Image (cartoon, one colour):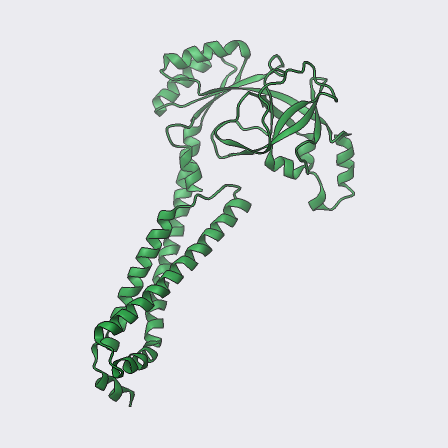
Length: 355
């Protein structure tokens, strides 16, 4: 989660969003941004519309059908009745990925009909909730005008990105002249620049709302850092407990190790050979323990990220390598210290202690 939040803090991501820009105000907003040595990282049109039909049937049919189905089989009511704030563009963003189908850049078919619907891309999560697949049809109501659509592609959206994201994206050409609201995103280097820009924008265009995301990101990051500290304290406690268990296990198995080394020395093994055998044993056990622990940790993190927080955990080889190196070193040193008497004492002394 910290990784996801910190991605929004780097120099490539926006931290200021300007809402409710009218089409005739875009040039004026860009001029104010340039005056403050800033640029509009993206200018995003938003068109409000309602879902009218799904798979050729009215939304009322699906709402009535929900009452006859089990909870897990229903289409969530909010997906059928909400206002869809959609956009149109000719490209896929770096925070998106096409999972299935294709992204159509431009619609050149004139007015869409049932025989010639608009190919749209829909976010994968809402497609799953609505039991949709590529090729299914949808019809949207835009101010009394019906827009027949076909799902041409399924998108994965990185919702943690600090920018407007959409369930439905239309190709260029059809909605360009539709009633719309413009959203612009930019990045300010510091709080002073953000405050100055916000003041100038609101003075010039009173209808535009400015949302400073840097404070939101800082607050979330602070909360997650505190949670991370608590996890680290628990991890430290677990490691300390593990060390105690390691020493206890070595002490408990010391008598067996003494017998084995006594036999080895009786048949002619030197101290150096016994030390090598112990070194190999502890190294092998530590290697198994480190990788078993890492596997369980990664599986647990993956399950939490995928099914609880809906994000993807980054896999870092460095963590695996460091954990192997540190745990092997720690186990070998502890094991050799605890087992000192098994290879420093002579075979005669060991035989007498056994008797």
